[in-house]
Length: 438
Image (cartoon, rainbow, N blue to C red; front, side, top):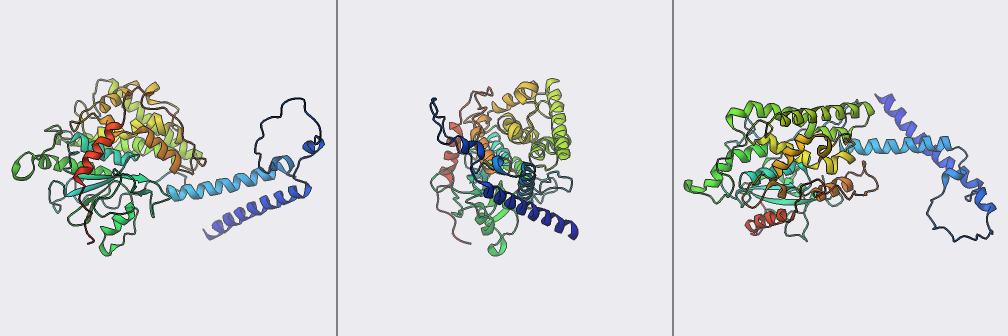
């Protein structure tokens, strides 16, 4: 209510004023603490210690350490909650509430809608290498054999300091990170170019799928895009006139088979709620109670998955690889190397405490999709770790990035050079000039 907001603002101002007064009082007493002044002029027989920067050494001369610490904590916590609330919307109880995608499929089952013609090289995807939701889409392209240019894509750079809205922009210095469709500077410009009137007011999220010929947005919901690609993949592989379209992926792969659809939908529901989004609930909550709920639900779901795979199930829905596995892969592949630490959910680790999930992960990373290499070529763990630790500054204000664990230390024994090769091959299809203004 109004009174509560006014009271909150007043408390914040009081804390700031208190901190300033405390510092001024301490300065009046003297910046140099007495103990240090007493030692001035004394000669030491030992070699001088390495000098360190201690700032103003406020705790040494402040009249009231308790008041200073309480004020500093109040100011810091207020700023942290404010920044985190802007980054990640919160419920009144402090739980992270992910905003819904704004531009999903118009098909009832989330699949391909009839208003979009099916044609090779007509649709373009904007994805970010570090993003798990984008990773779903890249893995789907690989498994379905669409990395030959049947559906083109651009890899964006995640840099909120450059992007005009959101975090995604393009790097002109890299041939692998540019917009071949519009020649846009960032993802917001793509959204604007694909919107009526040239102005988009919503969230500029990735992945984004557009129709290059119409200059229109098809979807920005990763789950819908995965299913859409599965629906159109057979036609794109056949090409015009029913002839093979050049796709080199597994013929007959169906990530959403009719016999398993009910199982897939149910698996997607709880895996998304407690695992895919569960790690973010742990990292973006703002109360201890909300964190405990999210962390407990996450590990309960991981134990459920571990028991499922330990019972002899090769994949999430049994013996067949489905979209449920594709949707789970980005979270599990990032868990030990990224989420466990920065999202405070590493009480138990995949490689140490969930052996059956770890075996599933290694199977998934070895799945050969587009004919060029296995799925581990779609994972760049170092880039993901760097992105999370440098861009989520409310969670890591110093911006220090851990050195590991690396893919090799996790037992993957892989390199990521092939991922650039896949993207470079895709970029050859996109070498034409950007589409003119519409």
